[in-house]
Every structure is written in C-alpha cells, then in structure tokens.
Length: 294
Image (cartoon, rainbow, N blue to C red; front, side, top):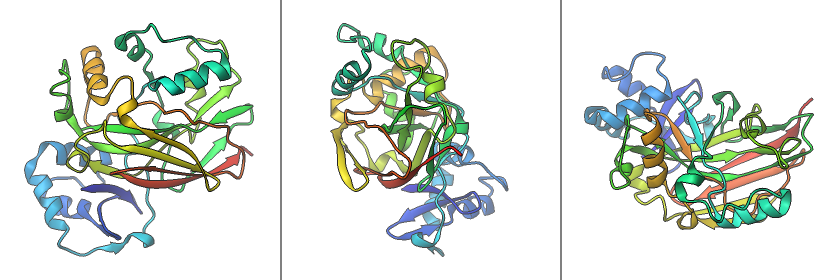
C-alpha cells in the first residue's frame, strides 16, 4: 500500500491514479483521533491489524484523482531523522576528490555507522516543493536516498529481525551545503544539512510488503531533464538491516523514525531555477524546484 499525506493534512492510500481517504475511515472506526498526525497513522497501521484491515477496506470506497490532490511530505514531524554518511564507496571517492575528506577505507561498518547524523524536522518539504539555497551558501548539492520508516519500537534488534520493525520506505533528498564549513571541518553536518527545505520526502510511504528487499532497488535522478545518477541499493556499504541493528543498540527507535541510507555517487551543485526529478523503483518519483533565498 502507498500511504500518502495530502491536502488538509489527510492520510490517503494511492492506487493507480486515485487517492482513497483512509484517514477518515480510520477515524470513523475509532482507530485514530480527529486531527491525527501521520506518525499516529504509521503507528496504528504498523501495530494494529484491525487498523490495516480498515485501511484496506477503504480502498473499495470513494476516491479522488491523484492529479487533483496536493501531496505533502508523507510525514512532517518524525520523532527523529537519522542520516547515514558516506554509505556508498563511489560517493566516498567523489567526496574525497571534491573536498579532501578522510579516507574511510579502513573503517569497520560500525565505525562508519558511528557517523550517523540527525536532521531537523523543520527542514522537511514534500513533493513538488522548493529547495531554498541559503544566502551564505557557496556550494549546495542534492543527494537522493532510500529512506526506511520505522513502524515499531525497536531496541537491541538483530539484523535477522530488523525488517520486522520497518513500516515502509520513502525517498529522501538530503540537501547538503558543502561550502562554507564543509572542507576539512568536523561536526558540521547537522548545520550544513539542516537548513529549511534541506530534507525532501515523498512522494508517499510504500509499505514493506511492496518492497520486501530494500537492498534490491534502483535509484535514478535527473537534473534539468538530464540523467545524472543511477545506482542500486545493493551497493550500500551498510544496509538497512545493519542500520537498524546499530541504531537500536544505541537508542530506542520509535514509530515514525526515519533512517535515510546515504547517497550514491553522482551528486552535483545546485543553482537557482534547477529542476530535480528522482525515482526509486518500487516507490515512485517526485520532483523538486530550486530557488535562491530572498
């Protein structure tokens, strides 16, 4: 099921070119309160079989044309956004060439995952949104990533069990200021990647039954109509299972937490007026605009 967030903060399910208002059905059945959040939708659907049955039953009811709704970020206030760093070898190489960053070749997987950083929820925009380049920025890149959405509380979870705690997947654009503060500097990621509009999510959340193997899908990006990135998630250094094992050994993951898995190689500098389009097989595609801060 493709769970979307649309119009006046409503939860829907996308089938084909139609949107079904599952939020209203869940409220009517007593599974959600009025004025629910998408975090609550995720928690109910992930943990209450009756709620998921109710949502699926709503697919037999009334619907709206997808083209006539305004899609929002599928979750706007997640408890945490954990972002993996340098998780594809080819991206490590391009970053070393571009900025003289550290050589991580000798890192263990846990050494690499210890570089997870947090992104603020205030940086989230949705499909069709606009990335605003800060006045201070001299160089801002796009990064397009597979993002796991946690559905159940997870603590000390093994890699073998990890996907049991996933609700689904979405696309995350981790927009990244390289300059200033990026070259040979430590502990600046939270700032450089935390500006307003620097986390784009969408177009919806695909439940894990529709993408049963997160290490078996493809990422494609176009910039101004030109194909600029093709990658496969099997090439991650640390996969989703390892990310959940590592993070859940440190802290409790909660329903609605996001784990975005790092960008492949192919990042490039953005300029005002640019148009981005990304696609992840099994999830869908979304577009973004780029403008300068006024």
